[in-house]
Amino acid sequence: MVRIAAVLLGMVLWPQSTTAAEVAGTLMHAGKERTFLLALPEQTSGDPLPLVIVMHPYPGSGRGIAELSGFSAIGEREGFIVAYPDGINGGYNAIMCCGAEDDVGFIKSLIEKVSAEHKVDPSRIYATGISNGGDMSYRLAAELPGVLAAIAPVSGGMTEEWMDQPSGACRSIQFR
Image (tube, rainbow, N blue to C red; front, side):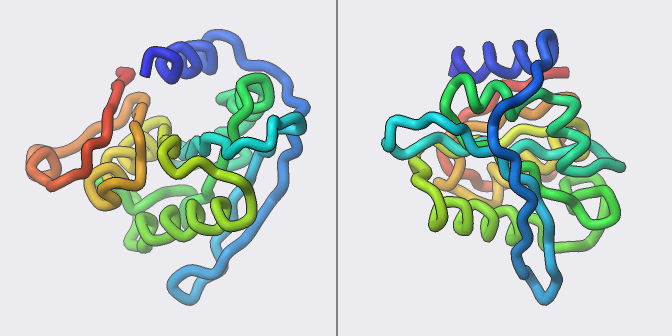
């Protein structure tokens, strides 16, 4: 948990260029083609890798949060895969706003797709995001019990009714 907090702090203070292979991808979910950006570390030990889902603010894009966060370079250096999903019309259907799409289902499908195509450690799947993406982190933790090891929302929030939602033992660290 401390390592994740250090990585997130590093993301904010020291964005870096990347040498990780960034690949644009698509998947069909709920009858719509959904898009994402995937950053794969070039050097791996062959062991299963952690997966970090990084979600953009509203309005935003996966490419935009990749450039803002520097997570691709951190993933390359630390040896983890980063997925940057795109919300429809620049937003996710998170707790307080920004759409009506099944973004929880989309991100679950994204996790399944990345896990099927790459060696992902299912016990080390994390979610983070800024603003609307942070809200989405909370929603994923509540609606996908047992899938995420931890969330780290940045400037995201949850309503009182969501605080009562059931969740699987998912750790969180919050940045305001």
